Image (cartoon, rainbow, N blue to C red; front, side, top):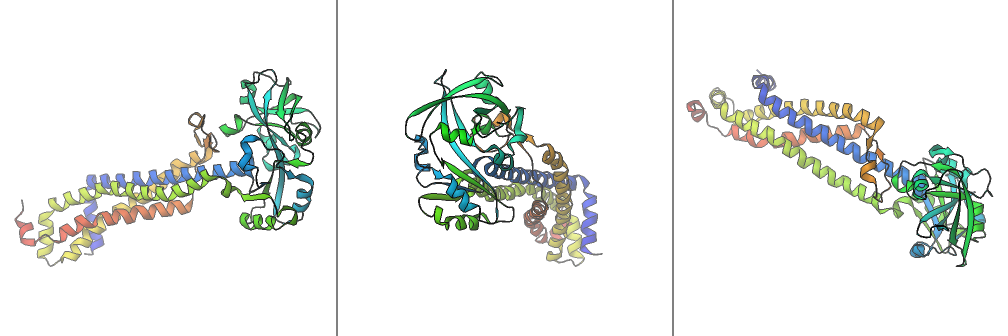
Length: 407
């Protein structure tokens, strides 16, 4: 009789212990698979939000603007016409979105402030799909319309309604002040809490006139085509004569540090996963040790019949390995079954995300992948198999005479 056949039969001779060990590995496999899916989902969500709403794949700014951003240095801008002409000749660029950031206050309530962004709405339809997030009203009809689009959250905060007029006060490029009245023409609702609490848009041309910016914008965001390498594209842009001096040209990864922390955290989660599997494998260790001491006579009989210590070790190891393989396989299937609705409908973190400055949507969808499933499956088997070596070797050192005398 082969060792594999003996191991298979022994598993069913101790169904309760085998089931207990298997459930521990199954739960560990399923939990880690869902955890990895959640982390990957959050990473993808943050990447999409950063590129679509905040930074694009590449951001162009005046080299000194970021250092003095808190002072609203509008004079440290980027020339729009010359930059757009230079960028238009580069292959691989999908969309170019110029923006002007304008901190503003309401005339009737100087304590209430908001950040206005002057944008080209036709470009933003392609860049961030702004029309998708329009819940009421419409976008400004012309580049010269003195109209503003607010988020629903800001609408409630300012205690105004659609089609109301508000007068905003800003600091201009020259350091003076200017006021302008806008009619609220549209209401937005974004999936990201940070955007809902700060987003207000006016036409780009109106923003330039409002802030006396002439042909300047505070930043130009670039979306590249899917197959384009962002770093190589950034290097190409840096070589443009019009943008070689006094400009900061960075990819979104270079700008945002939180996303880098997510990538670092993945390595930590892998270690946590291994520890989690080891803890789950202690059930197999304890169960196997119990089996070893309860099957002393059987071990003695096997030894007396000529089975060597190495073969006895293999027998117990095979028993645990079969349990681990089956449990890990079922755990991987269970993780994917549980994860499918979470990948479609997501997990609602909107309550937890209130007041947190992170570019993650209120509803995060898991990202299930074959790579994660295979990796977690292999981790389960390897860690569980290694964990059972100790009790398996214990069985091999039992002498046949002592085992046959045991009661």
